[in-house]
Length: 251
Image (cartoon, rainbow, N blue to C red; front, top):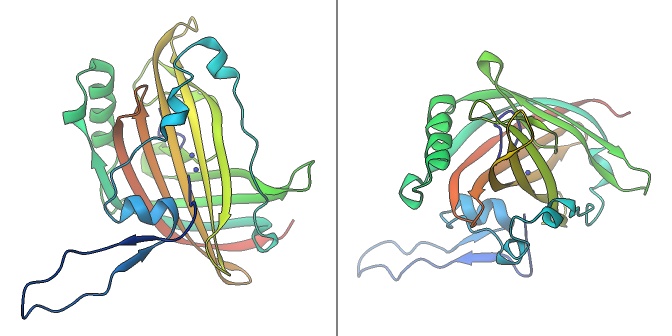
């Protein structure tokens, strides 16, 4: 699960996801169906967070943590460089009714204490070419007040529940174009949380989907969806952050 000093990426398979509203009563205004693109809009538009079931087959055995998935495709060259901006939490939901485990319930309480709708943070992003020639996210952070940091890249980090350390392993990392100027990156990490002696405390998954939309050569809109799950794939919480960033260096 995310430390919330870190935050990950998912899917946009096939045709755009279409949300069909139920037929309106006579005399009511007919609303056009809303077109949703990719994972971010699918879940932000009301879809229930569901972890892809194929990722649960590995269980919690030690071999699971050796899995690593390289980025599926290159990000657009227009993103290359370093970006700085801000984001705001525009959606936030927790799912305590789905959980009985004390650790999960404590995690949800920590989330409620640390995050709220409307909370703003500073965003820093760096995209650079890797040894394989693919453009990828080299580093990313969202800085909130009181030293709270959300990381979109995978790092060993303190767990949100005090006393633990997150050991993430990426199991899914996809990039897909959603249009001429929009791209979504989806990353899912399996996370083993350990104590100071490296003994397992808990297992879970963190999913982060990010949509990057280039609106000018040095300006980008961004949406970041974060969902944390327990080891069985049930959601603990979800949050959507939206904002803009400007490129200050192309290196």
